[in-house]
Image 1 (cartoon, rainbow, N blue to C red):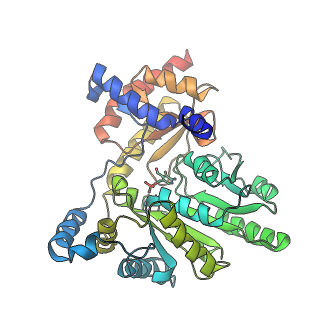
Image 2 (image 1 turned 180 degrees about the vertical axis):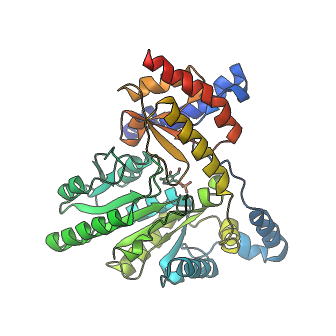
Image 3 (image 1 turned 30 degrees about the horizontal axis):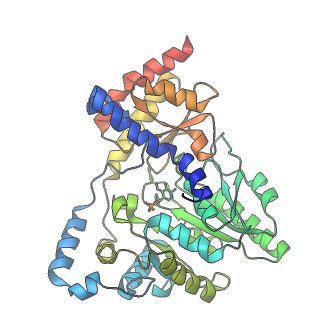
Length: 395
Ligand code: PLP
């Protein structure tokens, strides 16, 4: 018999994954080209050519014991050094290898830092809509996820509500920008205000409140919009980065945490994170991939393809009468459902072979997420279905 806790978790298991399975079933019935699966954030852009070249080069030229062996639980020193220098070049920061901890993707990084920071019952605050896995990650360490309700006008965080929720048990705040599921980039003005609130509360309560910046979509930002680098705005910031989307490598499970030397109790936090990486069973991030990404820090995927998808989808939906905020980053669009019940709306879309995820999975009922990391032609072929769906609701 599995644990009671797991029974509950299995029952509530990801709606997104369930949709993905549903998509496969529909494809078997109607043919893959007639099913428009917008459920999963699986990158459609090809990994850059540099990745393949780096893998071959490393395998052919580097010492195999080094490439495949154990290492410091935080990762290879030279890889961490290269990443620190690359961040410094891009954001005028001053990190060193000791500030970087290689992780098993952003998911691994979040679990490592939450294990390091949380006592049972500690609060972690996040802003709706949010990546639903945060609930599980915080629960893994018996923390309590506190959700600030959404600001559906522009999906920037609701800072007044946020301030009211901070108390002496608040240990961390997770923010994700560019955001999954809205595609919104939090403005510099928002970040400055958020940082001011957190600093003020830290002083008032005499505690440390860590800001965890979950940044798998940092490189996916359109129209030249700047995504503020958060360590520059708030001292106790820890960044979780991932190459899953920026280099289209989600199955390879590679990312890193940035733990700046300025954070409160730096030695304990970075030492704790090193041990957490080991005892959570990751031991270290995948060794070959560490060496690969270190050689590809300036490589890029073709984000123009996502941008074309964004433009076509956004303008078409607006033309058909849908309401949504134009995404500025990531590869998601968060559309207002045409009825109050987002699950019923997603089911109505399914009748047109369109698979989208109800906003309730992201703490924001009444909306649905469309992951447009698909071929352009999939979007083109799905549009008549979106149009008919809107017309059904007008009747
Ligand atoms: N955080 C957010 C907001 C995400 O959307 C995802 C994946 O979709 C993750 C974290 C996990 O990313 P990774 O594949 O790097 O573990």
